[in-house]
Image (cartoon, rainbow, N blue to C red; front, side, top):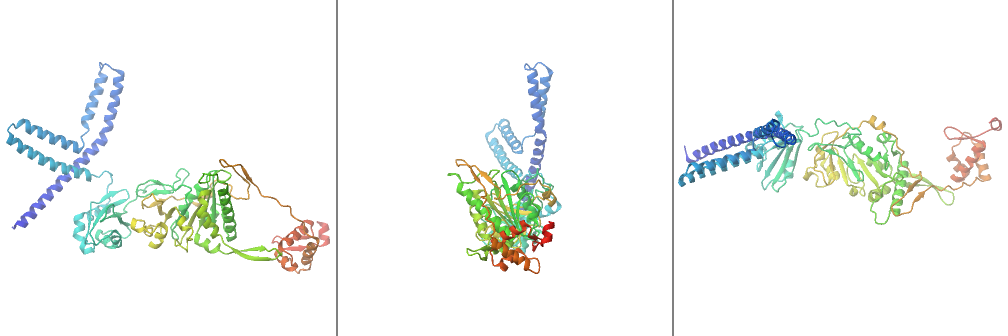
Length: 594
């Protein structure tokens, strides 16, 4: 046997002995940790009993106090020392014994040297055992046990080269509430982005199932990446059905924490068809419509989701209604900003002038249908002309300036691309992005930021439906399981008076006088006799019932003049209006009978 073979054999034996030692101390550490967790409460109980006995018998002359003291000593003896303290005491005892029983100096030196060596080996083993002790209490499944074994550095090193991963080496994998987490060391030819692109090679090396979600992101230090295998979720077992008591948006699948999105933020909610945008938004819509100082406005041209909320929200479901409500909101915003007290940054919501949340459902449809809406106007010479109006400038203005007036815009879309599903002037104003599953990484970058993939915000890898990523500048890229709020629950919610500027409201701001806004009623001028006669003649000579809007063309009068004349004729009983709105002249005998 050559010298090299002997050295390798000794090294293998040493590695085996080291592993055995570490495993032994790890098991001992876990045993002591479990016993301490079980028996320390008994010590607390014994101390309370002793305190009670001392209060009863301050002098210690009765058996009650003696028994309490004895039980406390017994309870303390049953609690084992932590492993590090046990090792320290053992080493100290060996050193003292060697000093007392071996008076000769050379012998003491040898003993102390041996004790120091044993101490160093024991301390190292104890440190490794305590560091690697599983404190989560999680038991790996059969799948997780196989993955943990294949993630071990030795197995990875043996198979990395043949799988195209030469130059990478795993650290020690850990089992967490959200799956398996493992650090990966990268040489000079690898980056976290390149490792993410090699996901198929990683999956093949680990023998992982195709449906297992694998995340790769940059590590905490340069030259390292972090590999996460989502074998489990911290939200598993939680009841995700929405109730008034469980009003959070969802549950973090990594930490298990309840995730909420406070009002006052401008939101972007994106996801492909079937990802669950409507369901994910319902808890938020409830919060935005609940309370005396909150009001909800929904712009929904599809008329599906808005119809569920029309008993507690202002809903615009046609292009013309969209333009009208945006005009009202923009006027309200400018009025609030004009009367905002000096030195105050934002409007203070009141029941008369509440916080208004505008929800645009399917923004791409609104951008198309509400861009050129025909309106008929009357010129100074009495003629009418058609002009096209758009709701987009008003929405962009609300996105830019509405926050100071407590008017917040939430934009929802299936097409999260700038200029297609999100207006260019609105996208930069978004403060919080909620992204469900999208089709491409490009769409994920639009919603979550250009650095999304590099930092682990991989919305294109999310399962469908009901799982979202929420980026608000504070959260990590941990998926959130959103709560399920059924349609029947929405319909059963209590009614609320929808917001509208047509209702007079009173505003009382700090340091500002009380302002009462009312609609000014202008007395209507009566129709002229000539206009009435021309309109009546046009109705009587027509072969069939006439629509009011056609009378302006027939008589040459303005729409306003026709409207006044028709009102005079219908009030006097000369003209009758059918259910479809058409007008007919009433004969003399019919008028007399009436």
